[in-house]
Image 1 (cartoon, rainbow, N blue to C red):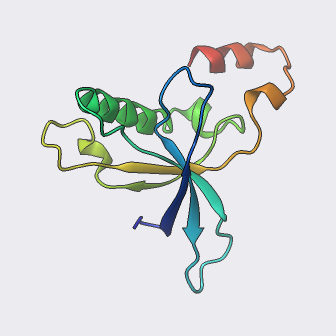
Image 2 (image 1 turned 180 degrees about the horizontal axis):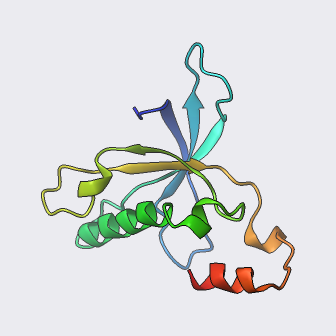
Length: 128
């Protein structure tokens, strides 16, 4: 249960086999009276396998913080963050009680499908 919507996790996202994905495809469960609700989104969550659980929580915290970098928040190349479930401030704390999820925009397009247009902003985004 998130701050904006309720979610149903559908399928874990399968990558190219080079690493374990911590994202899943999820469906937004519609609520009465809420307009413009997207149907699908991606749920990012820490991998619960030890011994890297704390590291995974730190990665999630960095992911959350990156969404507030102005060049990322305003750029159409990055998915939008819709919701945070749990306490994002304490994601990386050692208490283990703040397991959080990030609900973000579902994108059907991959970077492979995006047309490259050279400009200084492109390089600033890549470095960010």
